[in-house]
Image (cartoon, rainbow, N blue to C red; front, side, top):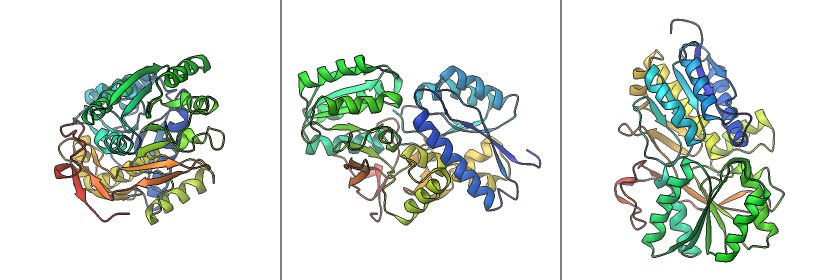
Length: 384
């Protein structure tokens, strides 16, 4: 572009089945833009966000992306939550030669020369969750998930981890993204029937809180049968009654209780802007730091020409709230900091496993052995 503001497109829902989590991503992206502009913008020019609600609908997001890339001439797009949305948008990114910055944890097995992935892949969250719960809670695992692409692939990977410890997947249930009480009740009955050691949940969006509430109403005990998830976040807990999720477990690269100066500063800034009790999940943290990464790449390139941005971002490291991050030059995914946490009675994630290592992204699951917590996929670092 020549002169004027740097225009960027934000692909986040404020309505629909995943609006609760996507709203936090939108908030975090806007916070980062405000910080960038308050510091003088990029090369003296402000960043101008363009946002249209996608309604958690892949087709609508595809149309929005096409309009932004085509009619609006935007080159840099940020967002998408569900894998179905990402898959709808990526062909347009490639066709228009734009760049998509994708801030959501996902199942892996994706690559585009025009995309940067800043959310966790399974070797940065599911691996650590499996390592923890299969050791601490047992090897009989019940899978429950939302019925779309991400959970199917995540369950396939988790099933491999269960097999490695000679465990057993006792049942596998998929429910609608907008599952109602009857569908959730049937799932709870199957859980009670099998009485597993662990429930691995990849339910996302608006069915998450009702599932945890139904679990509690059924009298099930997280001390003997915890729900373990890479999808449940602070945004979901905020929709539950106090104490509903106490004792359950999650893995993520960031929790809003992380007690480092950078994490505390980010959470404080977010809550000053969006409310003192606003949830700040890992998906929001990724949406925040990827905007700052992109701004630095833009400053280095001096242009929003996609190939220049992609080239420059590979040379940058950034002190994100979770820790220092960088993009892998080969697979376009990001080195991140895995953690495991348990929910307390006040609905706060208390970190129970924090190895203090930055993990190289392995989106193709080349190394899947639970015994291999070293070698090429871990960088030693000072623990937080």
